[in-house]
Image 1 (cartoon, rainbow, N blue to C red):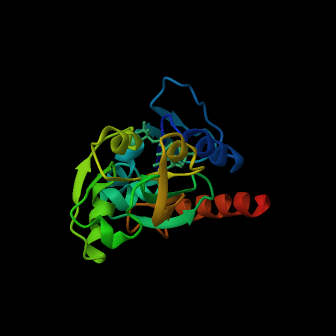
Image 2 (tube, helix red, strand yellow; image 1 turned 135 degrees about the vertical axis):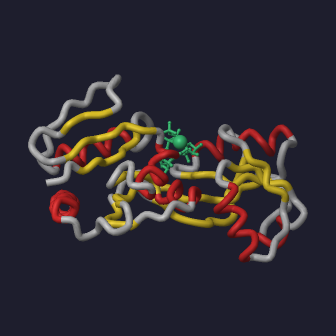
Length: 210
Ligand code: PRT
Ligand code: ZN
């Protein structure tokens, strides 16, 4: 029997819920803050703790067989992975927002404007689909600060409660995609016996919640 590897976020918004769902599946493992790998003692599985950005490519390349990561990160990296199950946590939307007093109210009005984002791939696809030519400014964090500093006319970022936008004097005007954490696997592993067993256990944990 092959020991599978599952990649989950080491720390951040998805870490706790990822660990929780695996434990609720009856998997027994140590979860030390400092360890990057943990062996499940009652199932042929190892858990790799990684930066979320690296998970889609690790799964695509088969370095990890499975992964738990936000759909937004999968789409942004363009990794070729197979979706097994949406997990119902880490829910958010990717939205375009402008300053409260901006006169931009439609996607077409973004033409010729500067948009700051950490998700340039998703944004570029969206703009292309809408035949809008805007300049994308790739920023790795604190994107919401851009319009206030005159760095950009708009931002494209993750929104969950909307509190951060509000606190920075921004209003969202269009939603590009919804996202949540998903269980994915390397293409071709969908019907592996242990993968199927794990998916079944996760589905019964999810069913018990509703
Ligand atoms: O260190 P590592 O690279 O692993 O983590 P990270 O810092 O890149 O990601 P992390 O932990 O912040 O987020 C992991 C995933 O959680 C994201 O890829 C999304 O799939 C999901 N998620 C859900 C969110 C949010 N909700 C969210 N609100 N990711 C980020 N945010 C940010 C948002 O950009 C905003 O700046 O949180 C801020 C607060 O949001 P509001 O709207 O609630 O104010
Ligand atoms: Zn990240």
